[in-house]
Image (cartoon, rainbow, N blue to C red; front, side, top):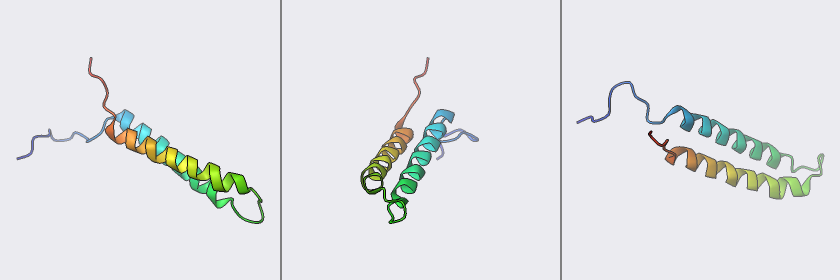
Length: 72
């Protein structure tokens, strides 16, 4: 028995916007981590800032999934 109306999405528009922001943060984290090579020489950036951005991105994604707008 299907209790959800036809044509409705599982998430609202704000959830998808937050998810896109989380994906952008995750991509930035992976890009920063990839800078950890001899040619750039950013040891601190790739080893600390990159993983912090990744954790932040996963927290944003978790928040996007569970966020519900308050109904007026």
